[in-house]
Image (cartoon, rainbow, N blue to C red; front, side, top):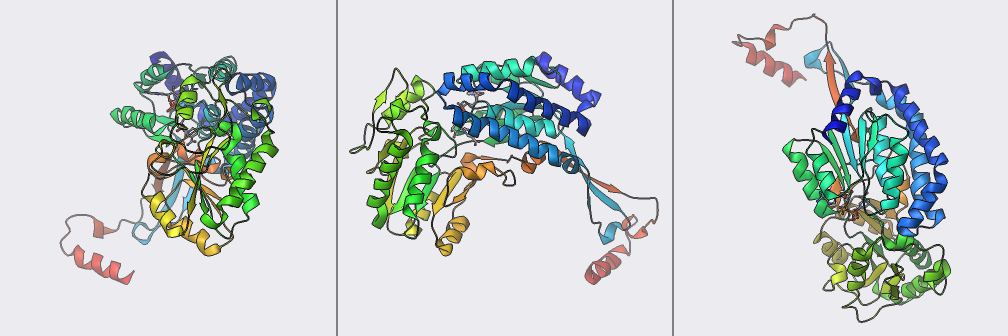
Length: 455
Ligand code: NAD
């Protein structure tokens, strides 16, 4: 750990990464590698999560390629100093903000989108001119191995390097003198990462999880709501940080909504989803037991079949869930969808606001007053109106959490900014020398007040 951080520090000092063309060349190289390794990537994701090829392309590869293209188109302008206006008290002066790389950054990935969540923050880090160490999640072991081989066989270790390992390895990395830490994972581990970062006051981003609600009000197009919630919930078998964790549906629509949901589950995955090539599996036995355990206090389930050998859990709707049940006490992170009725939107707002701040929220509504109310009255990371999950694909929308769902943002320009220190510079000439600001101050205060009153 010490050696790799040392090598990266030396590489950073040599100044290669300050050159924007160098950064672009590396980004192009990663894009090329994603094409070269495409089949291996499909295989690794299938081995880890039985992830359908389409989902791997859509939610891992495409997101990375789109990010690279966006960075290549915009990097030169983002990396240039931005001129800002001066102010009277420092007239004449020129004022600039210079985005500067931090130095050596560490990217710690999660297992649910194991390629994308390891590489996407690394792309922002590279674009901003940092050297980067990637620690993919050990739980997606095939993808972790592939990412490590792909990176370490093709890049100089001083610039970009991947290290495989578990919590202990990550902690040893965190003991090193890093310049930036970017963590994706659970809130519990996020707190440990922040604790480790605090020892050296290392700046960091925490991309965490939580219970992200979907709300379907009386004005919603109910079939569209059911279809898009069904898609956002069961993609990757519910193991998506921004998947709708549970649904609040207006009580007058609950029956129709459940009917539509059931129909879409069948339309998407067939009568027996265990036979569908389009439905992923749970990452490991620990998570399998955790998720199936959440079914124990449910009086009614729609679906609910599972098979431990295959790590399969059927897309399952929980029409009688309430906040006293274990499924509502923690982030589900699996294919169980509690559906709760509501009568008054204000009660929904009060309830959501009495829990941890969600990473995402989805409102299905055609009522603009309700849309505004939800946006203004509930703090959450980001979300959609009349869709789920899709907001994270727009690179013009910063992506990140708030409160327990994390802090800091990335994707597109926000990722570049996240990995850059904004260095503020005021440039002056030797003229003029305003005597007012220099001691001795006697008599100066009244002039200072006169000037400021005039302004
Ligand atoms: P996790 O917190 O268990 O692990 C994430 C990473 O932290 C792994 O690389 C792991 O090796 C490392 N780690 C684990 N324990 C550690 C410790 N004690 N010290 C140092 N490092 C440690 O998370 P996970 O299970 O991989 O991911 C699931 C969670 O991540 C969910 O809560 C989900 O919502 C969240 N998530 C968030 C986003 C986002 O973008 N906000 C994306 C994906 C997942």
